[in-house]
Image 1: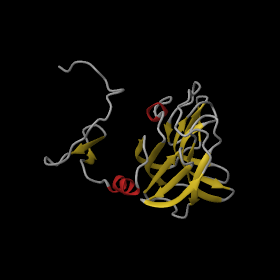
Image 2: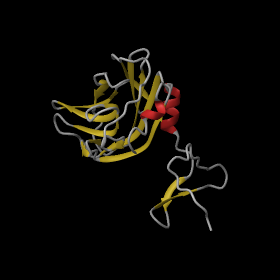
Image 3: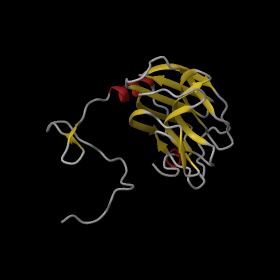
Image 4: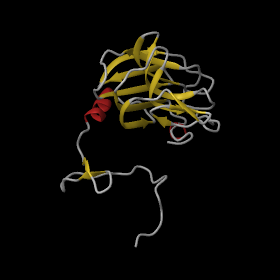
Length: 212
């Protein structure tokens, strides 16, 4: 995604939400993590947001965590993972920096609201060192990757406010819109001619120029 691509957009928020669809095709071995997302904060060892499966001494857990500011230790909410592999699931983490909580939602259901200790009541974006980037499916620090995800990742979303459970469920259930089909090159979207459309929320990174 790039260096500080996410943090700069939620800077100053007192609450944030991170969501993703994920399908694990393998589980991490003891002591390791399989990262759905990893957004770097300020140095080669600090992450602002992590969605991951974590093998805690033989017990695999769904883990959602991060920091409010670079002086935080890693804060997280997690739950034992008992759903195996090969199936899609939806995860959401709601970070409330002002009230020192992280709420973990799985498939639209609130699993746990974990008391944590944030050192800031708002998100304070950092200045990641060279080679530390926001990525999907691994971490990237010092231009090196690790904790690779084995499986599928889809529809990653970041909000600069706390989504309600109803809103998280709506995101999970949002299957309307143009469907993915085989295209002339790779995949394409098929539109129904009545209600389907696609929006682009930000033009950042889009190519510019003339069309003949």
